[in-house]
Image (cartoon, rainbow, N blue to C red; front, side, top):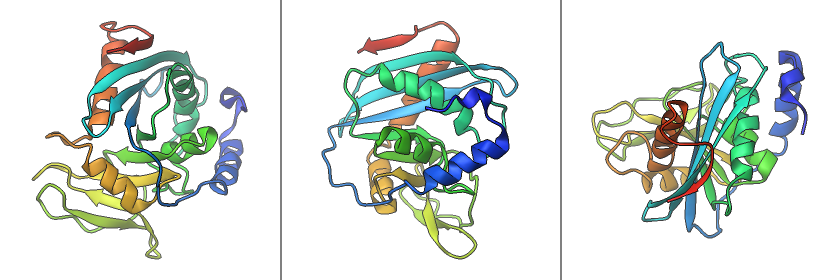
Length: 229
């Protein structure tokens, strides 16, 4: 893999465009016994990145373990290119998993990105892993607000009307989340999986638990490496 620490933003743009050609948005027809959530935490101007992946049984969503990594990165904080800061640490956390999940949910975007290459797509192509982006904020696209009830959703499209994902109300009367396929899954499948991963919170369980684990890692409550639960 290319050393992302040495890249310029123009070079990163070329890589994103090359990776885009390998993204496959297609129905997922494989097994679904394990799902995982991935999250990253860092200070905007820090070189230290904390990455976490939490494995869950599906459909029970019972956590079975977590993988945590701390890594130094030099690629700058640039919106639209955050994968170049985040992916190297996530790959290290991925390598620690004793068993890989059937689907990975990443805190971030899939194809709902100006160059169709959010972190879920970027990571999915590099690992050939079915992946879904679940983001708290819109990065790219236009949409109408979904209904206020849990489960309501509306399409997220580009300005030409091409659908990139869905805007999903994951909890009634709470701000929606932005769902888009990353790789080896399609929009309906991504939305269906995430709807089955919601348990009373705005965030789906995989990324909610990954977020919690990374924050506990940053504050030295839990340790680096793989831990079975």
